[in-house]
Amino acid sequence: MHTPLQKYFAQRVKNLFNHFHDFELNGDDVSLHDLRVEMKKLRSIIRFLQQIYPKQKLKRPSHLLRSIFQVGGEIREAQLMAQWLQKNNAYIIEKEYFPPERLKHMTEAFMLRSDDYKKDLKEVVDSLDEFVNTTNEILAEQYFIDLNARVESMCRKNLLKTDWHELRKLIKLRIYAYNWVQHEEDFEDSVFPYYNKLQEAIGQWHDLEIVKDNFSQKQIYLSQDLEVQKDFNLVWDKLTTSLKQKEKIIEDLLSRQVVAD
Image (cartoon, rainbow, N blue to C red; front, side, top):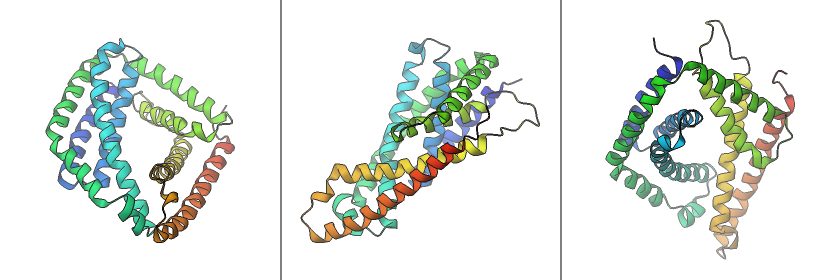
């Protein structure tokens, strides 16, 4: 009989290659997002296995997966900028600083290497398979208990905004690891709705922080072009207002202290 971790891993592998195929066909933001989510879940398994086995044995699959994930992340960031600029009608800034051709070229470059990436992903999967199939499920249970305690502890702290993204990553690890543990049929993860809402709110805030960072890196505020200045002033006000709204949502969620003692 397969352990929950084995079942979870098998589903991840199936989804991973399905979403990779979808991205090859469409090159759109949805299929890339789904692909990166599956890679995140595989990376969470590697992180767990590194707590048990010598890290050197997992160094190569970890490196291969991280490399592909980062390339996908660069495309995802460009997609995010394009979506935000178009949504806020910042066409002058988009044309001048974030031309659509750049995103197109990044996607095409990924496609040109897709066979290599699939080969690397297959190596990752084959490497992890042996570890997943020989890992005692009690170790997964202990790992989840530890993660759960760490998330609870972090949620109770008076966190700085600079800590929010790390909290989100920890929550996602906890959500993933929940699936590696055997539960009674009627057992319900009662705090999942809260954690999921919190991590989604932090994710939305973090996306806006990425937009803000991109504006800063391009130094758009220094432009002498009056049309660019006008466009920038309008979208900067929208961005800062949206950031404040997202921050308020996160602060309210953290202040609820709904996590049971």
